[in-house]
Image (tube, rainbow over all chains, first blue to last red; front, side, top):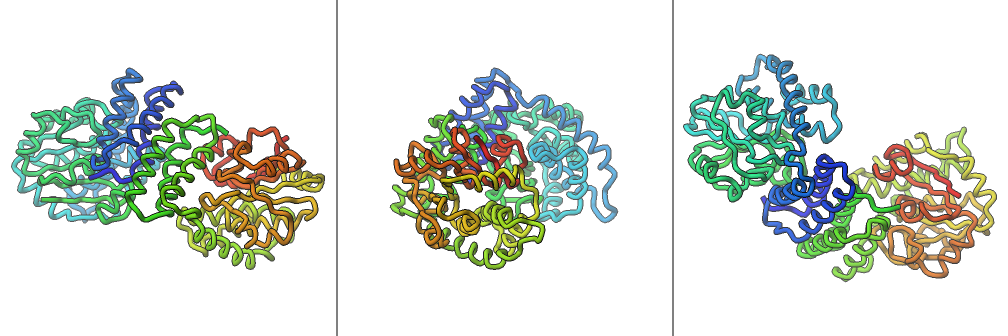
Length: 283
Length: 283
């Protein structure tokens, strides 16, 4: 997906949040913001928003000297997800299949990330997760179920830390010998890396690879050859979250996107409302 | 007030809204946004946010060739304010003095501007204006009343169109021979100019001058000599809205600011909550 002009203010805001999370040095905040504005002003808008974020977060790491500014945030999010998982794991409504329950939790798990940004406390996140079990789900659960059933080589692309704990519950619903899970190659924002996959117990279940990239999404040209091969050979790719949607929605590949719509730009692109949980299977 | 880093994303968003209001030409939207990003990246952050807005809105007028992109918006806002004024004019609670009632309406009139941005319809704006008659008012109404009573030369700085209709109701509570009203010198966003003062009937009541500037606030160095003299001679300046607060809060002058707090930066600066109606008298 191209970068729309509406993405820019939001991107500037996210960059500011990120540099503040990485360092308390106000001079660095200002320096990064000035650079971000210059980068954004010269950006090729046909590129996806995560490609700009990739450049900016590299620069934040370089200037602060901190390789993983969000490690502590990710640890908290993982811990919270485990606690939520314990409480929610047996709350499946009698009328809901195990796969749909797991899909809903995996999409809803993104609330942990959103919650942190919107000031929701843990009780609020718990309530929002419960609500997500009953709210409308745009797209076809049946189509997703069939795609999973038919897949021989399934590649599952994770999104954030925290959320990855719920991804594991969804992976448990799939034949383990047919699934590979991929995480980001390098820490970027609070996206899940191998460390988070290990924390979530994903590595005990299925092969976990990293994509070799430091983009907060999946920019194939930026990924390792190993990952690209795995991507090309997969007959089903399940891609979690907006960053993966923004970077892969124009790829001619058999992808099912699972995401919560967080902004009006994506909502317009998908033809649904903001906040909606979406399954979008293409090709 | 200096420009805080938090102001930047908001400023980029406002610039995008403004260029879209001025023209439907997508190439111009992109050109202006790229320029805005460059301008913001090089900006002297010790200047107030309206000084950056002044530069950007000049450029929008220059590139689109439209001198007053918001004229139709301002006409609608003026018309709506007149209708609201008719309904609300006699809704003064028995326990409330006429001056406080007029002050509250004059501050609350900013809802017409906010409403347009947040998608409130006219019924919603009406409800919000009614609620504003009862909500807490930060600052001292008594101090403002005394300052008005004691003033010999009162300069009243307006903010937006629409709102100026309620400013007139407040001016009616003041001795007309001691009051001068000032509007912006040149159209900028939906700020009130002489045309709006005439529409509101302000020119029939008191002398109306313009400040000679095209900033969405009062940057003294950018104002005409006539205006600066009037400002220096005034023994009370009543300054409406955030733009005037941002540009005048550090001036050593006898100013009473009347505003609704629209953002966290101003809220922090004033030590109150966002959305609060505020009277802040200094010097």
